[in-house]
Length: 294
Image (cartoon, rainbow, N blue to C red; front, side, top):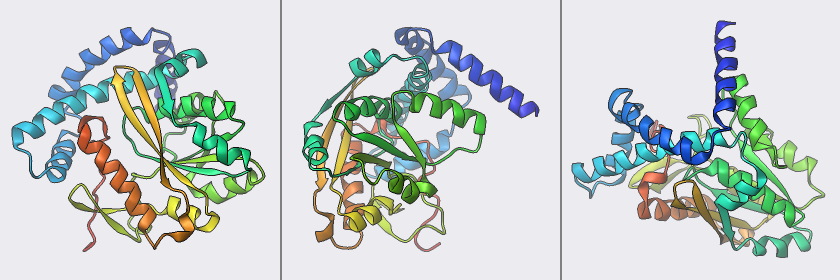
């Protein structure tokens, strides 16, 4: 009961904070960086290990430089997400610009649905919010597959701003049921497939950032069973609080692919993007919890 009360107070505080202009929140973010990195040291060992294993060619000083950039961006990301509670539709569209969305219109006009693939790179929450607005303008629906969090109060807070402009969020284990609900409509089904599966769910390891990496197979299974085309949504941070998203064809005919080809292709796309600007990926996630030999 006490934990629920604290969670409610926390959400109330976050909602109030969100009404401040984003430039002011980003000023707070820069202040947050110092205790986050030097005092709290939030998952610093995880970040250091992930970076070291992912970039064996880099020196320790280079790794630490990326690490510090990551924690500065993580602080920005925290306050950008807080702002989403009160961010208007106009401001959302101003902060995220898409290139190549007209490709989806071709499929929607033909009565087809499409799969979207991306990773936890840049502000995926803001990008998804803006995507839903743009897809609705193309007469489509945006369905987003997500993994529920344990705290129901904070999950409700997340889902309130995630769905305020029409996005439909579907829990990962309800994916097929959600697809069936909208089977007669043109939809964009979105996956951030770089999350770590459970040990029991792991059926395939892909080579990603110099490491065997357990991969979720949801996108590939759905693509091969429905032959829906897949597009990769490449997020590029332009400056603090602003992003561009390129819509890139990843696999337009899944029926012609070999087993695990689509899954491996997704990680190849993501790895290339991470290597360009590594500080924007979610390094504090315990991505490599187990290896093939385990």
